[in-house]
Length: 353
Image 1 (cartoon, one colour):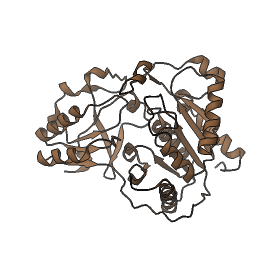
Image 2: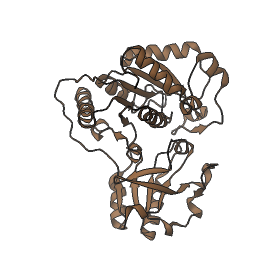
Image 3: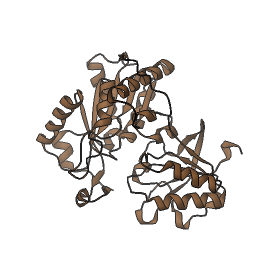
């Protein structure tokens, strides 16, 4: 079948996906594909003024060729995934797995797919780690985007800044913290970063050499990096990765501009100062900019097994005015990019074109 004639759907769509820049087009096997259908679950109540959002229990899957599974901040039960594989088998649909469910039983999914004769492709980056104990320095400026927790739009910010840099004439290497990045022309971190079997220092060298290799291949003017994982624990019950992945990345590179994405909460000057000091002494990076997202946390869920997130309609105005935090409007109108360029030019990290 001609790839250009495919009927493509993405699932499960949420507010975050709909806020991605240029989310109408994705790349599959090196070719651009127009998304035909946006699918979600009925209980999520996702709506869009620009797209028709279909729920899977009322959708006619017989018209699809490819179903692309993307990330979502809503919890997706394993039973839903099994149901999707059965639907794909019944309708002869291929599945592209672009989710970051790194704790999912991939072997069980592959076995079920094989049994039902479903073509399931997992997007990943299996490369060998070069652990030579020499750290490369990078001549081009590096902009890092870290987050205090999951689902704080690091991916969205990275994609928009990539577009902004390229629109200004800079060749940009964007390394995404999500497998989904492949769908949008980004590079992704290799799988060895997330697996056991390598020491902390070996992963640092491996990531540093991986980025150096990409720089040799692409010769970028600027590097954008969405830092995987979180910078801190969210509660006594939810320790996440204790900032482990962020520690590896910030040991492998030294950003010229460091951004920290936050949840949509009320913050104090003391909290922001604590975050600045925490990142300075824990990761050796100086925070330059704070970016607040529309994503919030259901506070009661911090005591439960699964954290629940929600997407607010607005951001606390006093938060933005008092602390001069940036948000989505600043990102979309170019103000955030302008501030990053001001920092880079002030320190001589980049020249205006």
